[in-house]
Amino acid sequence: MPADQPLRATPLHPVHCALRAKMVDFGGWDMPVQYSGIIDEHLAVRRSVGLFDVSHMGEIEIRGPQAAGLTDFVTTNSVHKLKQGQAHYSGLLYDHGGFVDDILVHKVADDHFFLCVNASNQGKDFEHIRAQNRFDAQVEFTSDRYSQLAIQGPKAQATLQKLTPVDLGSVKYYWFTDGEVCGTAARIAHTGYTGEDGFEIYVPPSEAVRLWNEVLRAGEEFGIKPCGLGARNTLRLEAKMALYGHEIDASISPLEADLGWIVKLDKGDFVGRAALLKQKESGLKRKLAGFEMRGRGIGRDGYEVFLDGAPAGWVTSGSPAPSLNKNIGLCYLPTEQAQIGKSIQIMIRNQPVDAVTVETPFYKRAR
Amino acid sequence: MYPENFRYTKEHEWVAAVGDAGTIGITDHAQQELGDIVYVDLPKAGTHIEQGKSLGSVESVKAVSDVYSPVSGEVTEINQTLAEKPEILNSDPHGAAWLVKIKLSAPAELAGLMSAAEYEAYIGAEK
Image (cartoon, rainbow over all chains, first blue to last red; front, side, top):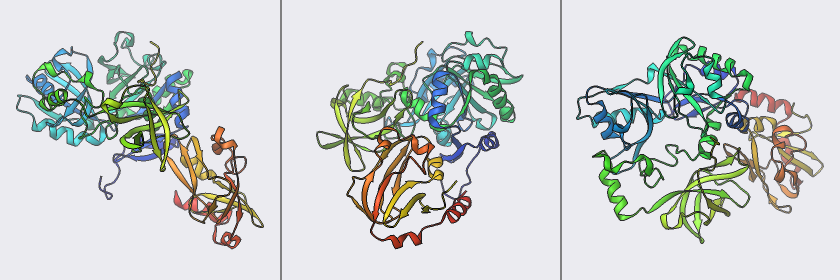
């Protein structure tokens, strides 16, 4: 992002400032990193409910008789398996198998797919999909038509249910429905990025402030808290959900990132498939692994990982885990060394500090 | 808010000195900016530190922040409580959560630091 480019803001920007949130530049967006504090907000989501402004996320829509054909060709997961009203996590890859982005694909209708993409990748994603469009499909960039609120936590459903006639109990996990929230047309998706139950709603930007306030009022009895990107990061890390620019980027394939489950090699051709097949045949050189610190210190993003005294990989994300009272992280290691229970060292300010690889996700909610 | 008997740096540390016996900490403004503090890294007693050089680091959930020594001297004691309860840096940064005690080798350095009023004006302008 060029330094002279002004930061972009969501319609909720004045609300965040009024709530005295700490604001940060997040991929060119002036976004709230925290309100009451990251730990407080994190625990509110794990124990009750939190509200996030994620309006910076991008939306791309693919329509037309061959919308499914194009969507399936540019993504790794099997679009033909999606039912109307169902969503899934997927990857947009380059020919060489690295990530353009990680996305959510929603099937609105046989001829209409709704993609939710990362804020800082949206322009690149749009161009990438358009460049692959040898199908009879229209690709439209529609980010300006939506604000997105995430209501997350065990009390998310009880909170949102007060504001919508849609029976949320009938919307299964990773399904969505078009309905109304506070009388406003909304796409209500049973999705999230916290490892907790919850919903993400896509609403007209002109209604974002009113809906934000209504959700906070509805969640008051549960102790709802506005939550920033700081808590969003610690929550997703505990649940081992990837973050673009950390676990994944153009140089990393989904197989390396332990995201083989979103890659359907047998579904037919798609962008990146040949490279992934080759990678699978010749074996993966590196693999994502979870670790817990054993020594004092926090292994953070970008820190080097040592095995038997020699550099072997790097930390992609590292942080205290507020729900677990541990310092955790994810790192890339040579595949043959990535098994659970391996002693590793993280270089923290030129000092090796002991850590051990552990099973992931670090946190799994009780269902 | 900011004690009159402390001197302050632009990097948001404070030092309170009587003769050549000093106590160093981070300011309330610094802890507010950092958010929830979860880890503190300090030098061993006996370490000699130059003014402006790293004295250690303070980590919040989100980030690592270096602490720079406001004065030169020898570390005589470190605050052991912080290893177990780093969160007191959020609640009492000017009191119980001092970082180190130091024997000043150049007390004249204090004159170059900001007074409480100057520091308050400085952080007011920074916002």
